[in-house]
Image 1 (cartoon, one colour):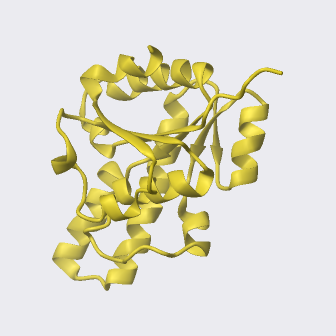
Image 2 (image 1 turned 90 degrees about the horizontal axis):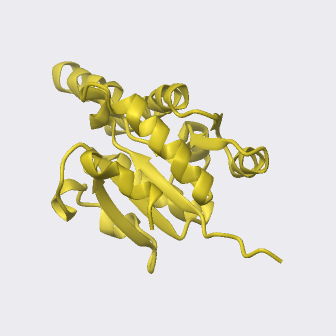
Length: 186
């Protein structure tokens, strides 16, 4: 019997959308990485979440409204990623993730519906898509979470809630976009 590789969740930061050529390059690397190890791609919020922040600053939103609008922004970015990752499939649930893997597709999770059912995180701007990725990685049973960021750095690049959202014992790493090829080695 062939051993099954552990599941890896890769969160693609929305900041990559601001780097010329980053999305096609990231899409190719993610497809290659997913061919080596079972992977679920988790979206950031990117320019869509930035629009929610700007609207909140100028018009004032309740914490709940801002939270759910930012999560919908993650769904929008999931569509962007699915458009750039060859062989990907947009998914919204664990059974759909499994079906995508069985079909040889790379699952890109649009998390809004799932998070509506599993609303366990605080509704505040201190909980960003990084914490949501840590929470979702736990829900899907990932053993590892990789956060892809536009720049190099460590824990100063994640939101204050991230350490609490990360499951005990889950391996995680923060990878700068310029080092993305590291996903396909090792």
